[in-house]
Amino acid sequence: MAKMSPDAANYRLGGDGQGQCGKCSMYTHSGKARNGGCTLVAGPITPYGVCDYVAMMPNPFGPMAQEERIARAQRHITRVQATPHMAAGAQ
Image 1 (cartoon, rainbow, N blue to C red):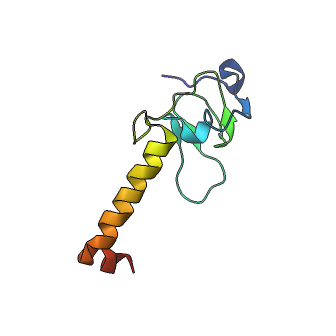
Image 2 (image 1 turned 90 degrees about the horizontal axis):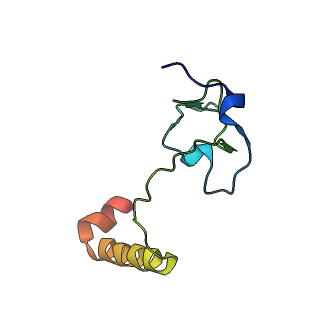
Image 3 (image 1 turned 60 degrees about the horizontal axis):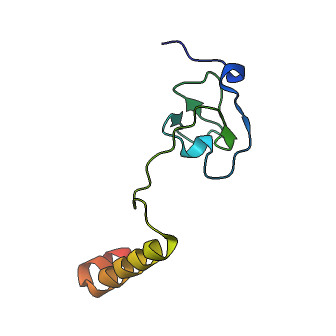
């Protein structure tokens, strides 16, 4: 499948921080290069760009409220600190 041009995808800098190329499932990046690529749009793609086809990756925590995410992270930290082999490996 041929890639679409940046103009056809309405590729541009910006986005709301949530819907940016760097968080899109079609964004590809490797190494220390400043820009990456896209499986849909041709050319170099900045992680801070956005297009009309952005496909956000699923949240690994699922649809949780911020408070629940924080509580889950705190429980995980407490559990790791209470496990001797886990805490020792972190040092």
